[in-house]
Length: 620
Image 1 (cartoon, helix red, strand yellow):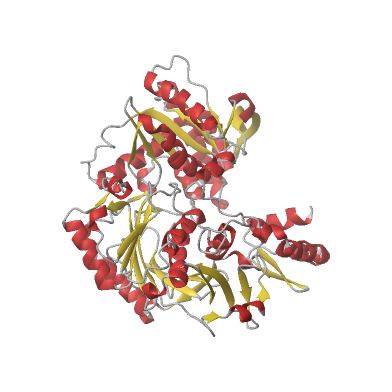
Image 2 (tube, rainbow, N blue to C red; image 1 turned 45 degrees about the horizontal axis):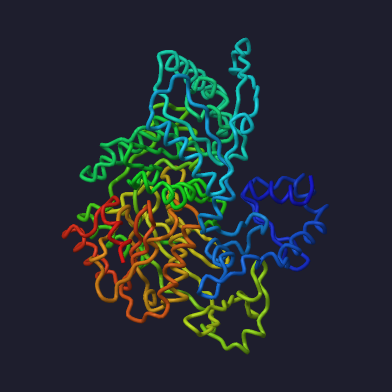
């Protein structure tokens, strides 16, 4: 095993290895570093140090050299909000926020249509979609080249006499998406699924409960009985299933309450076992993912649909941050004024109706095998909720907040960052060269903290002792759980939108510091305000962004860019950061002001869940 393979393997297990002069710094979850592995690290210490030092000094760190208009490159923004400075550099990939560049990095395949397929409108759209993807330089791999033969045996523990050899085709891991059409179940397919499910339950009873089964293992046990494209995916964590079907007119009805959309949307995704579901008619295109946005496009808008909506969703699928990305700790929520303010915010927003309770996946998905796959993919999440509330604490500085250009020249480089953008002083405080208007400003990167609702909690009735977590962005990401809470009994996980939260906090501290000087509340909901809801001193940004899902640092970068674009405005009281096909983040400098404005918007119908008001934000 060479150095890169060893470090990559360790990183996948949550082990963080970095170079500190002539020493290796290792942070590892308990039990991962065995005596044998420690010996191997010691044996290859010299090679590992040399490898990491070369990465840290590599000129490619500043390769995305085009500034975003705020003096920073995408690589630097992504590295800062991701807390990657202490991470293994090989595991950091620069964010991509240009959907044309995303398209060039994608490979997809189309599963052949079933014999006698009669949905003409879907067939026509399928052919058109293939051409449009190719026009945008997405690699469309023929089914025969995208798949390979796989054989494996299923043996039920304690029943050694029962063994079945499965031979099937699977879509290779390097394919980002397989596009299929919805296939109605037959009596035979239902019978096969019933048998496969019983086999899986039996397997879990005697062997699976002793260790957590991988997605690939689960798929091997049940895959032979599946009819959808999920049957043909080698690794569901790397390849998304996209299902095409006729438009569900009930789901796209603008008068349908959002709570009903949640039920329809979840069951549609689960029924087809798809990450993305596209409905088509002769006039419209709808796209659905776990965000459950109800984005609708006219058929003649297929170019915008493909480039701005579909491509970003394939490129950055919805995934939560694994706990291995955080340094874990605890805090006392009853001693935090910000946590108490957050609870107040959640209670005051109850009557707005912006935070439907969502659904429990365990209650929505009937088959145990499917529940286990979803649970594995989303890192143990059991709750699906829509929106979050958070409260940014006042930034923490040590020493001078701003320095002169002469003092900047005296600072030291920071491993993993371009020396032209990020440097540090003798006590380790990092400074950033930013551009505000025509002026270069050399300012300290503060330690940032915020309190947030945990994933799956009731956003309008938070428990101070159990539902409020604390997230930190220093030179790494930190997650603090409430003291005294048993995380084994209560599913305490951070929101999918952590990167968005910390990106907003960092951008505000750097470019609109008055907005968060005394802390600032944030509300995220899956809908939009009308353009005429915004008053003097209130701004919005992000309408033209590609519709990347939550849970990615691309979404964080786009929110960062939106807020930094307001740097020269001195009258900001509130900002709406728009996320197409997802929702809106509203941040304000004052808690009461935010509550009043959001309540007013809901009462007058100027703020609603779903996409009703999005079009008004796009108008000149």
